[in-house]
Structure formats: structure tokens, C-alpha cells
Length: 207
Image 1 (spheres, one colour):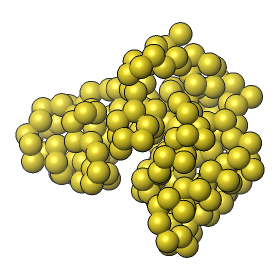
Image 2 (spheres, helix red, strand yellow; image 1 turned 60 degrees about the horizontal axis):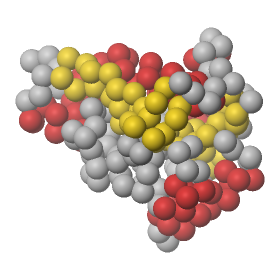
Image 3 (cartoon, one colour; image 1 turned 180 degrees about the horizontal axis):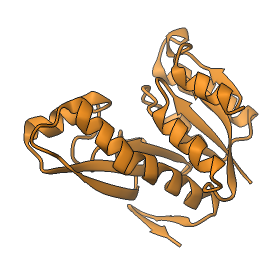
Image 4 (cartoon, helix red, strand yellow; image 1 turned 120 degrees about the vertical axis):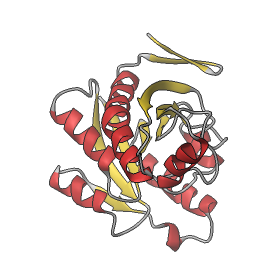
């Protein structure tokens, strides 16, 4: 059974999607063993508590740099004997120490079709603002492995979601969560835990 840690910073809607999927028996071969937040007052910690999952805080503000925080995070993940790290609305860009400690074992969900609207500065509502400014007809979500390049790791899965004429960033965000993120992320986590994801260069093969 693979031990999963979910890293969060805010409300934890993607964490809830994972908890719900786990409760339905859809995360095959894995279990959420820990939730770690970069902010002490994240509602995601409340979700973890309600689900009986241990919650921990490694606050970004407690460290002089992202690198120092990442080192502390890696130590904690190793202490907890974690096999898979899931970034679910985690608002800290982890540094190379994390990627080296968990090669092809960190999964992130991004609320756009990478490589569009991705990279530094593209997070949360900013992504949807950019998509609407550009006038795209389709956006969506991408689940990918994390590499040292921000939003640049091998893509596991993507789902397109229609952009409607009257969309606001908030409305588009909600539709992408419901139609793409909350489905793709648990599926990818389950495939990883079953040993069914094989990374070949930039390609991820589903076995």
C-alpha cells in the first residue's frame, strides 16, 4: 500500500476530491497518510481532521527561503515514509531538493491545458484570468509529474473544458474543478499507486 501525502495551502477542494475518491474505493493500492499545509489556518487541515487523516503544518513564513522550507518538507515526508507526494493547491514552488528526493513521485494538478497559461505567476484565479483575457474557447486541467521546471514535468492526463461567453474567472475556475480537476487527480493518483505510470522522457505511458 503506497503512502500518499497531500500538500495544501488553502481550502482543500482537490484534497476533498481525493478523500471522497478514497472513501469510494477508487484509490487502488494507496492511502492518504498525511496532509501537510504551508499555512496554519488552511481549511484543508479541517477537511483532513474530519476524515481522520493526520495533518501537519510546515509554514512558509517560518523559513527564510523556499529552499529552506523544501528541505524541512523533505525531512518530514521521509519521516512519514511517504511514497507519493500530491500538490493540491500548494502555493509554494518547491525547489530541486524535493524533486531529487521523490523523482517521478510528485504529482501536481494545474487548472489549464499545459503548456498554455502555465509557469511562474500562473496559479489560482490568475490562470483563469489569463485564459479569459486571451479569448480561448477551451481551457481545462492538467495532471503532471513535477520537475525542476515550474509546470514543466511530464503530463499524465488532461481534460478540456469549454469556456463560455459570460464566464468570470470564478465561474470558469469552478467548472474546471468540477469537470476536470476533481476527476483527473484521483485517477492519476490511483494509477501511480497501482504502478501503472511509466515515464519515458517527456511521455507518460499508462500501462
